[in-house]
Length: 159
Image (cartoon, rainbow, N blue to C red; front, side, top):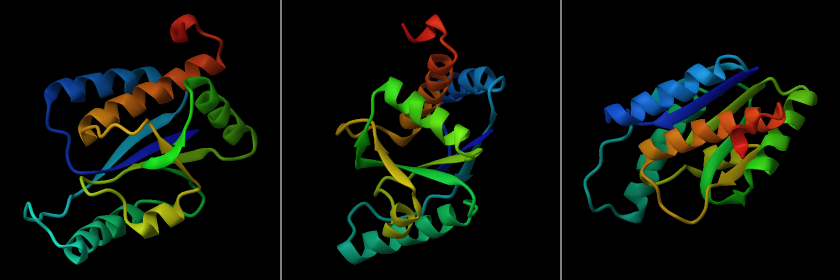
């Protein structure tokens, strides 16, 4: 199984890097895990709606270039479907059972995801209506993927 995160921007804080590295190491017994960073589009603080669309479009093109046709894609979106950890674990298990061995998660830039990326996604997932820094979201998502594997193997980690 291959799990890939396609994310906009670079990870800067050392403590986020360390946390993600720890979960990536733990995940290595279950899957090939990788993070693919695409550059964020530089933009001034205040943008018109059309300028925001242009920024999201450019980032979206970069994201889509990193996704292959066979990959099952989760787009992280505030308006996506919320799941419990158990529901998420079952989804991952079901995907692998039914032949999806390449699962990709997409975390957009500060403005969100372009419409084309949301259309390409097989599903949208939300971690609630909170706005979280993209770097923190990488860590939270990586932990939840690890938790899903632990739930599926019946480990007490989830308790």
